Image 1 (spheres, rainbow, N blue to C red):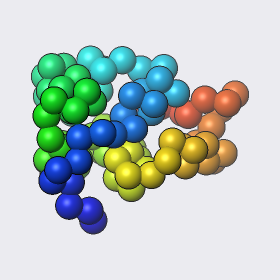
Image 2: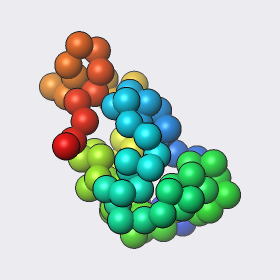
Image 3: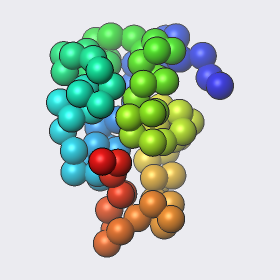
Image 4: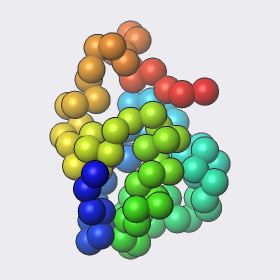
Length: 89
């Protein structure tokens, strides 16, 4: 498990785009405000452990991919359908 303190840049936008989901969808799944998600993605807010845990659960992705790995790691064919990452309901 990584210490997220100090990290602001994430791959959340790329993941949401690939899943064809909006930031507001992620916020609802995480139980946080859309503004918080937007601020973390834009780098205006630092990432907290709570945010990491909620985002990973909401997107069903490991934190290393979501926050620290290259977006290419999302191309795991086990999670792909017609070239797109399969989203969670």
